[in-house]
Image 1 (spheres, rainbow, N blue to C red):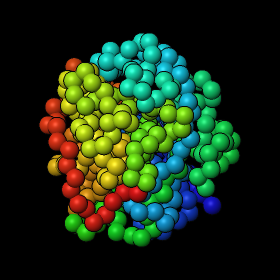
Image 2 (image 1 turned 45 degrees about the horizontal axis):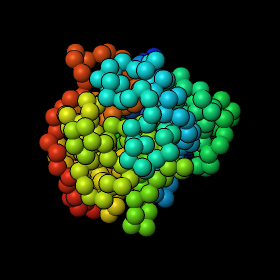
Image 3 (image 1 turned 120 degrees about the vertical axis):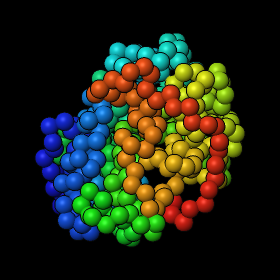
Image 4 (image 1 turned 135 degrees about the horizontal axis):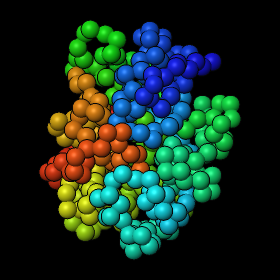
Length: 328
């Protein structure tokens, strides 16, 4: 059983909620579809258009599932060039072959989520219609009943607060429910890396040795991209100007979490690889690195920033800081 809540005018992100979502805190689904999450994305981006199913389930903190479609680098680049408002990020990509191909790790193709493909009007191979069912099974076609751009599961073990609905502050022992949802939403939209740690080794989780759009902006140093063969504890950071400016640092170690997440540092960010208690986080207020990443891969800013958005100059440091709670 699921219910959908009407969206405010600006939001184009819809959360279809399982009936268990409002059990822990009444009004949670309405808040997700209002100013707490959907309204945030709708106010920042002009082309976010996704339907995400959300439920409580037996996961660590949060988890997301979504379909990926492989397209050629040329198809991705053409789509990005035709719609992006980030000239700096586009200029850092060659118009010819996949720049990661030269590293010998990929087949030159890019795996995209359906939400990102929709934002880019990328229809190649049905990329904009590849959905997932509420049970996590991929392969359905968007537009059909029960087919979504992504499915998010949030831990049913408790430990969350809902700051949009409660007057109590977030304590050090609790997590902001909405920031966890935003973390998983970013991945459904397209911040994922195709690098994963399986069995203590770095492998390509997208299949056929594809890279993700975000992987194209992954650097070891100025002018030097990094991918699978260097996913072993060496530096890796997100940059949109050829690696000259470090916007944020990536996890790049087989022993530490998700390669598409930021290495934990302070101040905390929504896309940190480990959840932190006692802080209210939001992609519009946590420094902007998630917004910069989504903008680079193809989500246009609703209100363009003066100059190049996201050149934040975060210092390069790969930090592995222990946390009792980790995202799955």
